[in-house]
Length: 175
Image (cartoon, rainbow, N blue to C red):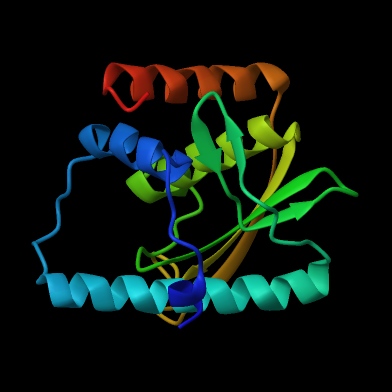
């Protein structure tokens, strides 16, 4: 219901560009699921992300910022803490957590690329990813595992990441 009340999204969003950028590098290896199953899992993930974001905002003190547009791409992270110069992103995934390989996985690379894009647009070098791994830890408990990761990026890394995002969007005719 919360998502249904949001205004319709228009324009080119960072998530669209990053999803398209990541897809060819990490072809899907799982069996195809029926659309009804995929949509159900996505809605459950969206609901959990919304709930987590609301609760974390009340504890950590960040706000959902208004979207910003840069170079024709609209960015809307889950949270912004201007006092600490931090972007907060909340995710829920069905992937198991492996601290040694997560950011090399399709999801981890996608999340990292998005977060760096948000940091670049907001002018921040710091980000926090708050993720709920519904299937727990790889080689560990199968119970849901909440993980928060604090990241810091150099200006050079953020500019290089944004350059890749822009070039991909231009190459694919999105811009």
